Length: 367
Image (cartoon, rainbow, N blue to C red; front, side, top):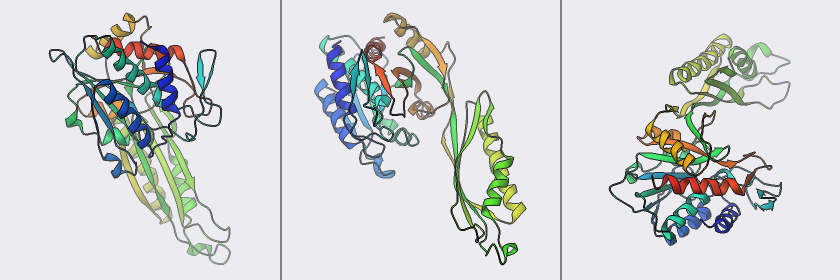
Protein backbone atom coordinates (compact mmCIF):
# COMPACT_ATOMS: atom_id res chain seq x y z
CA UNK A 1 0.00 0.00 0.00
CA UNK A 2 1.23 3.49 -0.87
CA UNK A 3 0.48 5.72 2.12
CA UNK A 4 1.50 8.98 0.45
CA UNK A 5 -0.68 8.20 -2.54
CA UNK A 6 -3.59 7.46 -0.20
CA UNK A 7 -3.10 10.81 1.55
CA UNK A 8 -2.81 12.65 -1.77
CA UNK A 9 -5.99 11.00 -3.05
CA UNK A 10 -7.89 11.95 0.08
CA UNK A 11 -6.65 15.54 -0.10
CA UNK A 12 -7.65 15.73 -3.76
CA UNK A 13 -11.15 14.45 -3.05
CA UNK A 14 -11.90 16.71 -0.08
CA UNK A 15 -10.99 19.76 -2.17
CA UNK A 16 -13.65 18.89 -4.74
CA UNK A 17 -16.88 20.71 -3.87
CA UNK A 18 -19.66 18.15 -3.51
CA UNK A 19 -22.37 19.31 -1.14
CA UNK A 20 -25.52 17.22 -1.52
CA UNK A 21 -27.01 17.78 -4.97
CA UNK A 22 -23.73 19.00 -6.47
CA UNK A 23 -21.71 15.79 -6.74
CA UNK A 24 -20.91 15.84 -10.49
CA UNK A 25 -17.28 16.99 -10.19
CA UNK A 26 -16.63 14.37 -7.52
CA UNK A 27 -18.34 11.69 -9.59
CA UNK A 28 -16.15 12.52 -12.60
CA UNK A 29 -13.01 12.36 -10.46
CA UNK A 30 -13.76 8.95 -8.95
CA UNK A 31 -14.91 7.57 -12.31
CA UNK A 32 -11.59 8.58 -13.86
CA UNK A 33 -9.64 6.97 -11.01
CA UNK A 34 -11.71 3.78 -11.18
CA UNK A 35 -11.28 3.53 -14.95
CA UNK A 36 -7.52 4.01 -14.61
CA UNK A 37 -7.42 1.09 -12.17
CA UNK A 38 -9.14 -1.08 -14.77
CA UNK A 39 -12.71 -1.15 -13.48
CA UNK A 40 -15.83 -1.17 -15.60
CA UNK A 41 -17.50 2.12 -14.64
CA UNK A 42 -21.05 3.44 -14.99
CA UNK A 43 -23.08 6.36 -13.61
CA UNK A 44 -26.87 6.24 -13.45
CA UNK A 45 -29.24 9.18 -13.86
CA UNK A 46 -31.09 8.90 -10.55
CA UNK A 47 -30.15 12.43 -9.55
CA UNK A 48 -32.70 13.72 -12.02
CA UNK A 49 -35.38 12.39 -9.67
CA UNK A 50 -34.38 14.55 -6.71
CA UNK A 51 -32.35 17.49 -7.98
CA UNK A 52 -28.77 16.25 -8.00
CA UNK A 53 -26.52 17.03 -10.95
CA UNK A 54 -25.00 13.52 -10.76
CA UNK A 55 -26.02 9.92 -10.27
CA UNK A 56 -24.67 6.95 -8.36
CA UNK A 57 -21.34 5.63 -9.60
CA UNK A 58 -20.98 1.86 -10.07
CA UNK A 59 -17.74 0.03 -10.77
CA UNK A 60 -16.66 -3.59 -11.14
CA UNK A 61 -13.19 -5.11 -10.88
CA UNK A 62 -13.46 -8.62 -12.24
CA UNK A 63 -11.94 -11.38 -10.15
CA UNK A 64 -12.08 -15.08 -9.32
CA UNK A 65 -15.55 -16.25 -10.33
CA UNK A 66 -15.34 -19.16 -7.89
CA UNK A 67 -15.31 -16.72 -4.99
CA UNK A 68 -18.29 -14.79 -3.65
CA UNK A 69 -18.24 -11.17 -4.84
CA UNK A 70 -18.08 -8.29 -2.37
CA UNK A 71 -19.40 -4.74 -2.56
CA UNK A 72 -17.65 -1.68 -1.14
CA UNK A 73 -19.68 1.50 -0.80
CA UNK A 74 -19.35 5.12 0.33
CA UNK A 75 -21.15 8.36 -0.49
CA UNK A 76 -19.85 11.29 -2.52
CA UNK A 77 -21.84 14.15 -0.99
CA UNK A 78 -20.94 16.24 2.01
CA UNK A 79 -22.97 18.42 4.36
CA UNK A 80 -22.74 22.21 4.45
CA UNK A 81 -20.52 24.19 4.76
CA UNK A 82 -18.52 22.13 2.26
CA UNK A 83 -17.42 24.57 -0.45
CA UNK A 84 -13.76 25.54 -0.68
CA UNK A 85 -12.38 22.97 1.75
CA UNK A 86 -8.76 23.71 2.68
CA UNK A 87 -7.24 20.68 4.41
CA UNK A 88 -4.49 21.15 6.98
CA UNK A 89 -2.10 18.40 8.15
CA UNK A 90 -0.62 18.63 11.63
CA UNK A 91 1.08 15.89 13.65
CA UNK A 92 -0.42 13.05 11.61
CA UNK A 93 -3.95 14.46 11.64
CA UNK A 94 -5.88 16.05 8.76
CA UNK A 95 -8.24 18.92 9.63
CA UNK A 96 -10.16 21.53 7.70
CA UNK A 97 -9.03 25.11 8.18
CA UNK A 98 -12.02 25.67 10.46
CA UNK A 99 -14.28 27.42 7.95
CA UNK A 100 -15.81 24.28 6.41
CA UNK A 101 -16.31 20.63 7.15
CA UNK A 102 -13.38 18.46 6.10
CA UNK A 103 -15.45 16.02 4.06
CA UNK A 104 -13.93 12.92 5.60
CA UNK A 105 -17.59 11.97 5.81
CA UNK A 106 -17.43 10.22 3.48
CA UNK A 107 -14.41 10.84 1.28
CA UNK A 108 -12.27 8.90 3.73
CA UNK A 109 -14.24 5.82 2.71
CA UNK A 110 -13.87 6.57 -0.99
CA UNK A 111 -10.11 7.20 -0.73
CA UNK A 112 -9.61 3.97 1.23
CA UNK A 113 -11.48 1.92 -1.37
CA UNK A 114 -9.54 3.51 -4.25
CA UNK A 115 -6.19 2.81 -2.58
CA UNK A 116 -7.25 -0.77 -1.82
CA UNK A 117 -8.13 -1.35 -5.47
CA UNK A 118 -4.86 0.17 -6.66
CA UNK A 119 -2.86 -2.01 -4.29
CA UNK A 120 -4.74 -5.16 -5.29
CA UNK A 121 -4.04 -4.48 -8.96
CA UNK A 122 -0.38 -3.52 -8.52
CA UNK A 123 0.47 -6.45 -6.27
CA UNK A 124 -1.64 -8.84 -8.34
CA UNK A 125 -3.46 -10.06 -5.25
CA UNK A 126 -6.02 -12.81 -5.63
CA UNK A 127 -9.56 -11.49 -5.15
CA UNK A 128 -13.19 -12.17 -6.02
CA UNK A 129 -15.12 -9.81 -8.24
CA UNK A 130 -15.20 -6.48 -6.39
CA UNK A 131 -18.14 -4.16 -6.92
CA UNK A 132 -18.18 -0.51 -5.90
CA UNK A 133 -21.02 1.95 -5.37
CA UNK A 134 -20.38 5.61 -4.59
CA UNK A 135 -23.76 7.18 -3.94
CA UNK A 136 -25.22 10.68 -4.17
CA UNK A 137 -27.38 12.62 -1.70
CA UNK A 138 -26.82 10.26 1.24
CA UNK A 139 -26.75 13.17 3.66
CA UNK A 140 -30.25 14.35 2.72
CA UNK A 141 -32.19 11.13 3.21
CA UNK A 142 -30.18 8.28 1.64
CA UNK A 143 -31.66 9.28 -1.73
CA UNK A 144 -28.94 7.76 -3.87
CA UNK A 145 -29.09 4.30 -2.32
CA UNK A 146 -32.89 4.45 -2.29
CA UNK A 147 -32.70 4.85 -6.07
CA UNK A 148 -29.88 2.39 -6.79
CA UNK A 149 -30.29 0.06 -9.74
CA UNK A 150 -29.89 -3.08 -7.65
CA UNK A 151 -30.04 -5.24 -10.78
CA UNK A 152 -26.50 -4.00 -11.51
CA UNK A 153 -25.19 -5.44 -8.23
CA UNK A 154 -24.44 -9.15 -7.93
CA UNK A 155 -22.73 -9.07 -4.50
CA UNK A 156 -24.82 -10.18 -1.54
CA UNK A 157 -22.51 -8.74 1.11
CA UNK A 158 -21.37 -5.14 1.43
CA UNK A 159 -18.98 -3.07 3.50
CA UNK A 160 -20.25 0.51 3.72
CA UNK A 161 -17.35 2.76 4.72
CA UNK A 162 -19.29 5.48 6.53
CA UNK A 163 -18.97 5.70 10.30
CA UNK A 164 -17.08 7.68 12.87
CA UNK A 165 -14.94 5.66 15.22
CA UNK A 166 -11.58 4.06 14.53
CA UNK A 167 -11.07 1.52 11.78
CA UNK A 168 -12.26 -1.77 13.26
CA UNK A 169 -15.65 -0.47 14.33
CA UNK A 170 -18.45 -2.56 12.81
CA UNK A 171 -22.01 -1.22 12.89
CA UNK A 172 -24.35 -4.21 12.89
CA UNK A 173 -27.61 -2.45 13.72
CA UNK A 174 -29.12 0.90 12.81
CA UNK A 175 -32.57 2.45 13.20
CA UNK A 176 -35.26 3.09 10.66
CA UNK A 177 -36.60 6.60 10.30
CA UNK A 178 -40.00 8.16 9.67
CA UNK A 179 -40.38 11.85 8.89
CA UNK A 180 -43.51 13.98 9.36
CA UNK A 181 -43.55 17.21 7.36
CA UNK A 182 -46.57 19.48 7.05
CA UNK A 183 -48.62 22.43 8.27
CA UNK A 184 -51.12 22.94 11.04
CA UNK A 185 -53.94 24.95 9.48
CA UNK A 186 -56.21 27.23 11.50
CA UNK A 187 -58.23 30.28 10.50
CA UNK A 188 -57.02 33.87 10.51
CA UNK A 189 -58.93 36.65 12.23
CA UNK A 190 -58.23 40.02 13.81
CA UNK A 191 -56.82 39.17 17.21
CA UNK A 192 -58.05 42.36 18.82
CA UNK A 193 -61.48 42.77 17.28
CA UNK A 194 -62.74 39.22 16.65
CA UNK A 195 -60.33 36.61 18.03
CA UNK A 196 -63.23 34.18 18.61
CA UNK A 197 -63.68 34.05 14.83
CA UNK A 198 -60.20 32.65 14.37
CA UNK A 199 -58.52 29.30 14.99
CA UNK A 200 -54.91 29.61 16.10
CA UNK A 201 -52.60 27.20 14.28
CA UNK A 202 -50.04 27.97 16.96
CA UNK A 203 -52.42 26.81 19.66
CA UNK A 204 -53.13 23.59 17.73
CA UNK A 205 -49.42 22.93 17.28
CA UNK A 206 -48.69 23.65 20.93
CA UNK A 207 -51.40 21.23 22.02
CA UNK A 208 -50.09 18.49 19.73
CA UNK A 209 -46.48 18.92 20.78
CA UNK A 210 -47.32 19.07 24.48
CA UNK A 211 -48.86 15.62 24.27
CA UNK A 212 -46.03 13.97 22.32
CA UNK A 213 -43.45 11.66 23.83
CA UNK A 214 -40.18 13.04 22.47
CA UNK A 215 -36.38 12.67 22.55
CA UNK A 216 -35.33 9.37 24.20
CA UNK A 217 -38.37 7.10 24.23
CA UNK A 218 -36.51 3.92 25.18
CA UNK A 219 -33.10 2.39 24.49
CA UNK A 220 -34.09 1.66 20.89
CA UNK A 221 -36.35 4.58 20.01
CA UNK A 222 -36.05 8.36 19.69
CA UNK A 223 -38.24 11.18 18.39
CA UNK A 224 -37.58 14.85 17.77
CA UNK A 225 -39.14 17.99 16.33
CA UNK A 226 -36.78 19.84 14.03
CA UNK A 227 -39.05 22.64 12.82
CA UNK A 228 -41.97 24.41 14.48
CA UNK A 229 -42.23 27.79 12.83
CA UNK A 230 -44.67 30.64 12.33
CA UNK A 231 -44.07 34.34 11.81
CA UNK A 232 -46.81 36.91 11.90
CA UNK A 233 -48.27 40.01 13.51
CA UNK A 234 -49.64 39.85 17.03
CA UNK A 235 -52.95 41.31 15.86
CA UNK A 236 -53.64 38.38 13.53
CA UNK A 237 -54.62 34.89 14.68
CA UNK A 238 -52.00 32.65 13.08
CA UNK A 239 -53.34 30.50 10.27
CA UNK A 240 -50.35 28.25 9.44
CA UNK A 241 -47.55 26.61 11.41
CA UNK A 242 -44.84 24.54 9.73
CA UNK A 243 -44.03 21.30 11.54
CA UNK A 244 -41.22 18.84 10.74
CA UNK A 245 -40.45 15.91 13.03
CA UNK A 246 -38.88 12.47 12.97
CA UNK A 247 -39.05 9.15 14.77
CA UNK A 248 -36.31 6.52 14.79
CA UNK A 249 -36.10 3.02 16.21
CA UNK A 250 -34.05 -0.12 15.92
CA UNK A 251 -37.35 -2.01 16.21
CA UNK A 252 -39.89 -1.86 13.38
CA UNK A 253 -42.92 -2.25 15.66
CA UNK A 254 -41.69 0.47 18.00
CA UNK A 255 -41.08 2.77 15.06
CA UNK A 256 -44.61 2.19 13.83
CA UNK A 257 -46.02 2.73 17.34
CA UNK A 258 -44.13 6.00 17.88
CA UNK A 259 -45.23 7.27 14.46
CA UNK A 260 -48.85 6.41 15.22
CA UNK A 261 -48.60 8.14 18.61
CA UNK A 262 -47.32 11.36 17.02
CA UNK A 263 -50.03 11.26 14.34
CA UNK A 264 -52.70 10.76 17.00
CA UNK A 265 -51.43 13.76 18.97
CA UNK A 266 -51.71 15.84 15.79
CA UNK A 267 -55.20 14.52 14.97
CA UNK A 268 -56.49 15.05 18.53
CA UNK A 269 -55.20 18.62 18.65
CA UNK A 270 -56.82 19.43 15.32
CA UNK A 271 -60.16 18.01 16.50
CA UNK A 272 -59.97 19.93 19.77
CA UNK A 273 -59.58 23.32 18.12
CA UNK A 274 -61.31 22.70 14.78
CA UNK A 275 -58.22 22.93 12.59
CA UNK A 276 -56.47 20.47 10.32
CA UNK A 277 -53.04 19.16 9.41
CA UNK A 278 -51.83 19.02 5.81
CA UNK A 279 -48.64 17.11 5.21
CA UNK A 280 -46.92 13.80 4.65
CA UNK A 281 -45.73 10.94 6.81
CA UNK A 282 -42.72 9.45 5.01
CA UNK A 283 -40.89 6.24 5.80
CA UNK A 284 -37.32 7.15 4.83
CA UNK A 285 -35.75 3.78 5.58
CA UNK A 286 -36.20 0.65 7.66
CA UNK A 287 -33.96 -0.53 10.51
CA UNK A 288 -31.56 -3.44 10.22
CA UNK A 289 -29.87 -5.65 12.78
CA UNK A 290 -27.39 -8.54 12.53
CA UNK A 291 -26.35 -11.06 15.11
CA UNK A 292 -22.73 -11.09 16.26
CA UNK A 293 -22.36 -14.58 14.81
CA UNK A 294 -23.68 -13.56 11.37
CA UNK A 295 -21.31 -15.03 8.78
CA UNK A 296 -20.42 -11.71 7.16
CA UNK A 297 -19.98 -9.99 10.52
CA UNK A 298 -17.56 -12.73 11.51
CA UNK A 299 -15.75 -12.34 8.20
CA UNK A 300 -15.23 -8.64 8.93
CA UNK A 301 -14.08 -9.43 12.48
CA UNK A 302 -11.54 -11.89 11.09
CA UNK A 303 -10.32 -9.32 8.57
CA UNK A 304 -9.83 -6.77 11.35
CA UNK A 305 -7.80 -9.23 13.37
CA UNK A 306 -5.71 -10.17 10.33
CA UNK A 307 -4.52 -6.58 9.91
CA UNK A 308 -4.01 -5.95 13.61
CA UNK A 309 -7.19 -4.01 14.33
CA UNK A 310 -9.41 -4.49 17.35
CA UNK A 311 -12.89 -5.33 16.11
CA UNK A 312 -15.65 -3.42 17.90
CA UNK A 313 -19.24 -4.46 17.19
CA UNK A 314 -21.65 -1.59 17.80
CA UNK A 315 -25.02 -0.10 16.97
CA UNK A 316 -25.79 3.45 15.87
CA UNK A 317 -28.60 5.96 16.09
CA UNK A 318 -28.14 7.14 12.50
CA UNK A 319 -29.08 5.71 9.14
CA UNK A 320 -26.79 5.04 6.18
CA UNK A 321 -26.85 3.49 2.73
CA UNK A 322 -26.56 0.13 4.52
CA UNK A 323 -30.20 0.49 5.61
CA UNK A 324 -31.40 0.55 2.01
CA UNK A 325 -29.00 -2.18 0.93
CA UNK A 326 -30.24 -4.51 3.65
CA UNK A 327 -33.79 -3.83 2.45
CA UNK A 328 -32.76 -4.91 -1.04
CA UNK A 329 -31.20 -8.29 -0.37
CA UNK A 330 -27.62 -7.23 0.36
CA UNK A 331 -26.16 -8.07 3.77
CA UNK A 332 -24.47 -4.75 4.60
CA UNK A 333 -22.58 -3.50 7.63
CA UNK A 334 -21.09 -0.07 8.20
CA UNK A 335 -17.40 0.27 9.00
CA UNK A 336 -15.61 3.03 10.91
CA UNK A 337 -13.06 5.05 8.97
CA UNK A 338 -11.79 7.23 11.81
CA UNK A 339 -13.69 10.37 10.81
CA UNK A 340 -14.33 12.52 13.87
CA UNK A 341 -16.45 15.58 14.72
CA UNK A 342 -18.33 15.03 11.48
CA UNK A 343 -20.87 17.59 10.28
CA UNK A 344 -18.88 20.35 12.01
CA UNK A 345 -16.06 22.69 11.01
CA UNK A 346 -13.94 20.88 13.63
CA UNK A 347 -13.97 17.61 11.65
CA UNK A 348 -10.71 15.68 11.41
CA UNK A 349 -9.21 12.27 10.65
CA UNK A 350 -5.88 10.68 11.50
CA UNK A 351 -3.63 9.42 8.74
CA UNK A 352 -3.33 6.15 10.65
CA UNK A 353 -7.08 5.61 10.37
CA UNK A 354 -6.93 6.25 6.62
CA UNK A 355 -4.18 3.64 6.37
CA UNK A 356 -5.99 1.13 8.59
CA UNK A 357 -9.24 1.51 6.64
CA UNK A 358 -7.47 0.88 3.33
CA UNK A 359 -5.67 -2.16 4.81
CA UNK A 360 -8.99 -3.53 6.05
CA UNK A 361 -10.53 -3.14 2.60
CA UNK A 362 -7.60 -4.96 1.03
CA UNK A 363 -7.95 -7.80 3.53
CA UNK A 364 -11.72 -8.07 3.09
CA UNK A 365 -11.31 -8.20 -0.68
CA UNK A 366 -9.11 -11.28 -0.38
CA UNK A 367 -11.29 -13.33 1.99
